[in-house]
View 1 (cartoon, rainbow, N blue to C red):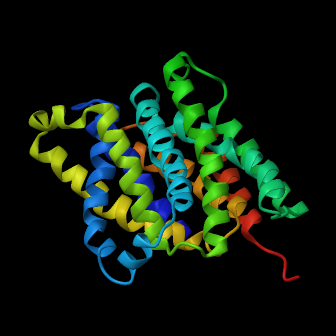
View 2 (cartoon, rainbow, N blue to C red):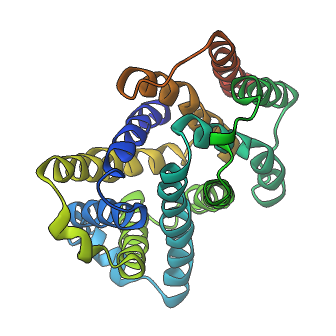
Length: 284
């Protein structure tokens, strides 16, 4: 399920690049996630989901609001801004350094240990990412883009850990956690970006992209991803997520004309090999 979600999400990066030619990054992100929330809204009002939402205490709302800010306002908002300054593959590669932080923080906060084989897989993945990325080029070094990428990276790290912790405890159903967080996070993005001001400028083709991203790549994909987090450790889920480097590079080559050299291909093979090694759990 997690691999299927990463495949779906990889297509997002292509559509985001196309859409950014028409409207700014933050309104684009806000409209995508607010539309996805509207799609989920009828299911949130159905019993027993609505009864669960009404029973949430103020501390639950604080937890879900914090997670919403991490998941949408910082992570996805930062991603859209980063993609407006940097190539797809550059932004994707920078996110591949998140397993290092998750391995350290996950062991401390989640008590989810990483074994020797998984550490080896992480090292192979990082080596592959560096082979893919280096040497640095001037068009890969936009300061605003790198800052936005770092915000996306760190918010993704803490989002992965906190989401796993909450879902593992089973306190909130997946639909409740996904829908409520998406509603809060997207509303914050709509208000801060004043997304409604760009609505008159949106073409029919961009509306098609927005509806596709909201329905398939957001509403459906986030429910699937949160469901997978009930079983996968934060580290394993993040490594699977990082295989998007390969998928995005291939899709960017097909649809955007971005070249793939032999060095990049070698890096992608190592990234995939490292991800597989991490997720081959011991029988014990």
